[in-house]
Picture (cartoon, rainbow, N blue to C red):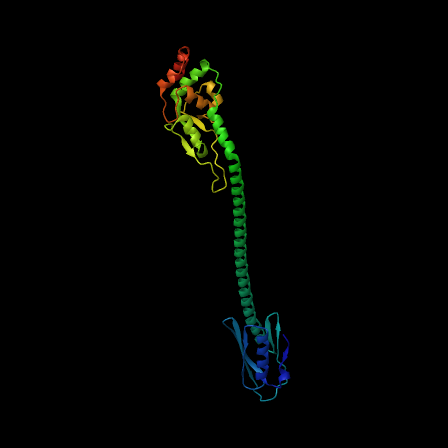
Length: 304
């Protein structure tokens, strides 16, 4: 801001104030500078107060001696302070502190505004990052579903063929005392014997076992998350919780030893030894499948 010298205005205080306010306006400062004048002379009072976000300054300038004044009155802007230079230092300090209050208020408002704008930008940035992340996740999911769908179609024929091989297989069992002991034990301690059949294998299962045999049908599909249906073993037999299991059966159990999961073994039991899919077993039908010489071993296993 340029310096203003009152002496340049030939004691025209109104012109001085007008030019000074115009300069403040040009600088876009929220300040109003006003005065009450009783003629050229000494400053008798200076008052400054906040009016909203602006500072209003009132000066009384009087000439008690009715004599022309040659003393200069200067006003200039220095780091947002408007300084009125005069012999009365007390008035000068009062004016500076008043303008300092406005300056601090403006700084606070500017800082608050900057923080608000920064917070808005951060929220906007987070929203953008979230949308980008969601878009990438959606793209990855779409690619996964597409890839697995292609795999599903490619493997469908192979999966069906594998199921047909299971139905056509006959496990080579080592018929022995241990085998029939385990058969008796299993006749007593087996829970549900379940057939898990993918929908693409349903016709083959029904053709082999008949329409009266219960089974659990599952879909051979790609799920909404992109996963492919998995069943593991097709036939399982759950075991009633017991402390000891015949050593012969260990080879056919899952790692937790809670199920028989060897599909070929279970199929052989159903085909040749009177076991059936479902929640209960016909012990007499199983017993009838046992040769006479092995009945003692079967009964021992059943009694265990």
